[in-house]
Amino acid sequence: MSEILNELADFGIVPVVVIKNEEDALPLAKALMRGGLCCAEVTFRTAAAAKAIEIMTKAFPDMMVGAGTVTSTAQVDEAISSGAKFIVSPGFDAEVVDYCISKQIPVVPGVCTPTEVLMGIKRGLSLLKFFPAQQAGGCDMIKAMSAPFPGIRFMPTGGINAQNLPEYLSIGCVAACGGSWMVKSDLIEKGDFSKIEELAKEAVQLAKGVRCTN
Image (spheres, rainbow, N blue to C red):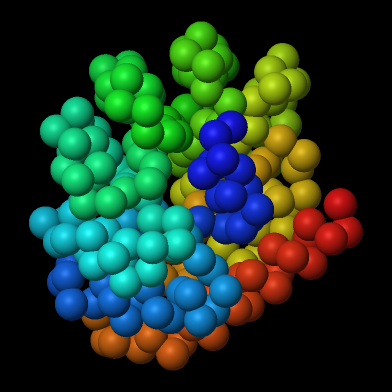
């Protein structure tokens, strides 16, 4: 993994954020940073995503902010221009992955089959997003699929929450988990950033507790 992706593994949790209004970007970033969760995957599901990434990275240059739900090379360019430090996609789009590699920006494509894992290996990738994690077989599927690929690590995303996070993080090949329970859209829209900070702190402690015992 690149240095940036290694940092994501150190966090253990990557908040998956949907920002509808760019003015929410700064207080959200502050809440995550105060909560000790110094990273975020801002999804390209809204028109505010690129501007939100720009605001967050300018305010906190050391924060590991990436772009998620990236499905086109045009979005890759937009994300890079906004300051995104890594790219995450929901599936394995060879065009998008190859474009990211050519741009030398870390990319974490989504996979849920051995064939897709092989596509990543052939491109020299070592961290892949397992998505949708819970719906695609959860921890048992990760364990089974990782057996033939000992050099690959996964970032399960989809259905991850505070209750099942420890089980996922206890799997040796899981580098980090993507989750949105600490950054739910309703909390962001209500401006309840103190609650987000509280949930971020809890998530960080939960992850540390698992990693310290493994």
